[in-house]
Image (cartoon, rainbow, N blue to C red):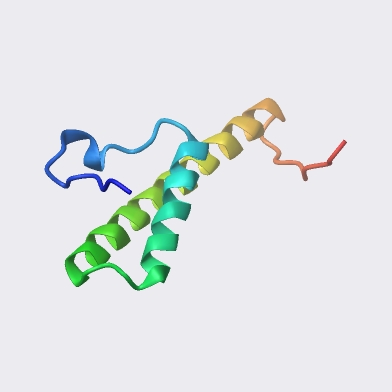
Length: 81
């Protein structure tokens, strides 16, 4: 599996969508849990994972804020249809 080079300009860019960020995060977690990474790559992947996790949280928070606006400032429980 090819690895992103830290010197590549897009290596630190965050994915445009929540789904893409989650997919990358899941892949990182699998690599971290495998125990096959050298120490320097472990640290780099951990830092990337932390950035992706924060990115996902930020996207979810933004959606929650939009829902509050749509519901006149009151966040209502989700009801599956």
